[in-house]
Length: 241
Image 1: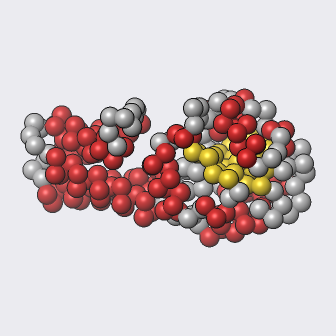
Image 2: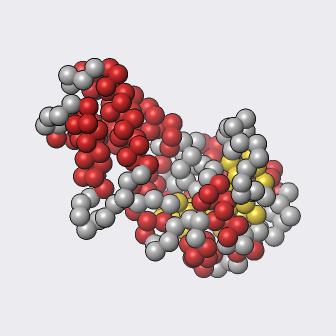
Image 3: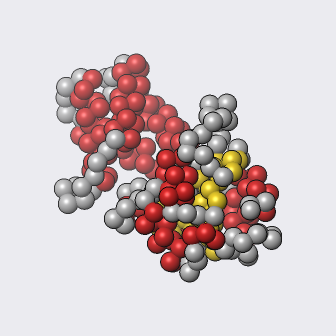
């Protein structure tokens, strides 16, 4: 594949290379079945518990000196249950979390088409996986979907002082594969982190994966290119100016 002036491509992980949202949704469905079978909560209460757990995930703050990320997320389940009905839910919260985590990781797979694309691209350019998130959580996802061997470097935001969209982590990626920002492309689904970050760092191009074009047809910040499927990426890369 001939790519015009591109020496490295940075890829986001969650909801770009792997369907994290889909895996999470299916994992929650398994927990709903568990709670219907093992608890005294009504069905509507179970859905509220699961919604509250997911809300806490979105807004969690984590201090590794206080507890592990696993313990924190068990507490998310326990707190969500106690808000519905006071009681001792330690064991049920632990079981819910273990099921959710195990199922979610099982479902985080890299498609054969994505693997083939990455292998083909790597013949021409350096590839970097650049993902935000807590170190353990992201490393477990990376192991589960088996992407390590497909990249020249893997950078997890939670292992650094700054995450996307800070320019520093993009420049760190450039250093790892010995390229300049103006020779790199960022591919990701998140406008605020992937696209804004690529723009902040002065990359050659940003490519936004927008799986819901009917929802956001006028994005801000504005990516250089937009695709609606990863299958469209090779053609776009060949036309990057």
